[in-house]
Length: 507
Ligand SMILES: *Cc1c(COP(=O)(O)O)cnc(C)c1O
Figure 1 (cartoon, rainbow, N blue to C red):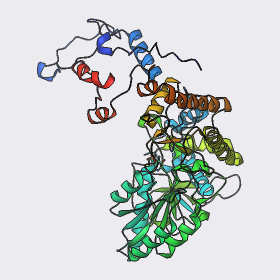
Figure 2: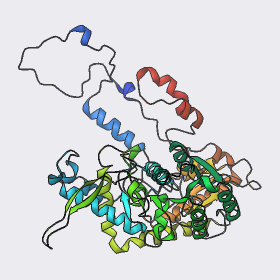
Figure 3: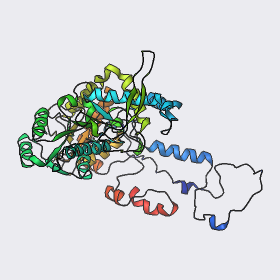
Figure 4: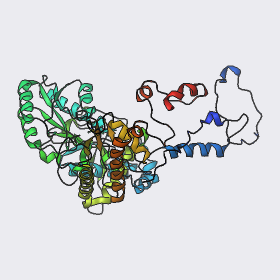
C-alpha cells in the first residue's frame, strides 16, 4: 500500500477568509414597488456574513463535504455502531411524495398507506425478534431502552410491588444501559464478567439473592459488547425470572442474530432495535434514528403509544383493512411527538422487504466477515478471548513487551493515514486498550483484506517506527487533536472572532 505522509491535505480556508467586500451570492431583481426604510431600531447591525459569489459558496461546501468521512467513501468498522451501507433505494422510497409529504395531523382516512407501512414494519419487527407486541415510537436505541425500563417499572408498580427498583447490568454494557436505569429512577447494579467475557453465574445468583425483593430486572446485550455470544443466556434469564425480575435485551447487536435466534423465544421480556444499525437507516450526522421497542404479552399493555392497529378487518380479499392509532391501555405514555421518525420506518421497510426470507444471510455474512478479520489478526494482535465472535470482535491495541508506549489510539489514528475510519476505541471498558471492530455484511473480501493488511503493517510500524504512530494522522487536514480540549472547549459556530481561538484545536 502506497502512502504519502509528506503531502497532507490542506486545511480549508473558512468562509470568512474567503470573503471579499461587495461580493454577492444572488442578484435580486430591481423592485417594482416603492422602497421603504426599515426603522433603525428593528435593523440588526451585528450580522457579519461572509461575502461570496454563488460558485465560491458551492465549491467551499462541496470541498468541506469531501473532507468528511462516510460509509459512502470508505470502510467504517466502528464496533457496536453497525455502520453498514445504506442502500440508495431506501432513499428513493422515502422520497416518494406520498411518504415524504404526508403530514402527521392528516386524518386517518387520508393516511392509510403510511399506516399500513408502519403496521407491516411492526409485524416484521415482532416476527424477527419473536415478540408479541411493539411500539415504533422511540427515536433511538437509548430512547427504546428508556421505554423498556419504564415499562418494566410500571409492570411492577401495576402489580402493587413498589420495592423493585434495582436493575442488574454487566460491566461490559454500553454506557446507555446504566444511564437509562438512572434516568428511569432505578438503580443499576454492576455485574463483573468472567474470564471468557460471559456473566459470572455465581455472582449473578448471589446478586439475585441479595436483592431478591428489590430486583426489577436485568439489562443485557446479546451478543455482548465484547463481541461474544453469552453462553449461559438461558440460565441467566431463568435465574433473574426466578428472583422476580424481568429481562431486558439491548438489541443493538441484532445484526448477529437476524433469522438465527429470536430473543423473545430465548425468554426475554422486552428489547429495543436500532433501525439505524440493523436495518440500514442512516445514522446521519446526529439526524433522526429509530429505536422500536418489542415485548411479550406481559408488557404489551405498558408500551409507549400510540401504536398502529387494525381497527376494522378487511371484508374480503379485494378489500384492505382499516388502520388506526391506538393507545395501549396501561401505556407509559408518549415518548415522541407524533409517531416516531416515519422516514426511518419507510427505509427499514424497504430494507427488510428487499431481503425477505434471505434476511438470515445478513447475519451469516456479518459473522463470517468478523471472524475472518479475527482469524487473520490473531497472532499479531492480542485478543482477550480465544473464541468465535459474533458480528464484531474486540482486540487489544497494545504490545506491552514489543512496542511499549504504543496505544490503541495511536493505531486508530494511523489507520486514518491508510484511509480507513478507526474502529471503536476504549470500549468495552473492561478490555485494556480495546479496539472494537465491526466490518458488517456489506463489505467485499478485497476491502476486508486491505483493512487487514493495514492493521498488520501498523503492527510492524509499532515495533520499527513507533513515532509514525504517535504523530498520526499525517495526511488529514487536521492532525492529532487534543480530544479533551475539543470536548471541553467546543467551537460550534464559525465566526470571524472565533477563528483565533479555534486554532489550537486544529493544530
Ligand atoms: C448503539 C448502542 C446503544 C444506543 O443506541 P443509540 O441508537 O445510539 O441510542 C445501546 N447499546 C448498545 C450495545 C449500542 O451499541
